[in-house]
Length: 183
Image (cartoon, rainbow, N blue to C red; front, side):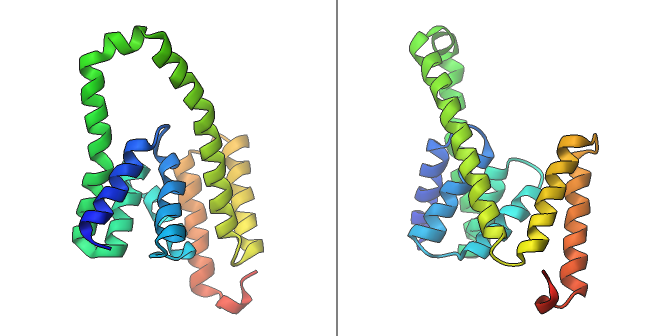
């Protein structure tokens, strides 16, 4: 895949993605894992996990890491540009027409309708990532997912600390426990 084609794909995905960074993940996965078959599912899962640990928007981090995986440093730079340019263009347009958009009944109705679709896309993203994570080491992955959910829902522990602690458990488990003994 050429840098130009990569730019166009990320640009188009970013232009059509509403609802935050997590909505871009299933689209990038669909494009580069399923359609183009340039990245395997496990690598994509790792890219998304790594993207979550980086500061800033996950959409930009995922585009950066996908670009780096496919085309090295140039791909990473192109990924950043392609992921950030559409929101910049849209925000610039909204700046000039904000009062019209804010008072337009049709725009408000469209935004309300998109919020339901965004929830569905995020649920699909969670389902797809969980399914991919559970392919290998089902018991370990399930325990980590359930622990993260329960800690996030029922404690006041900062989410960053939960993610860090569970990442540390993963590093220890996969570094010190032989692969064949992992549940």
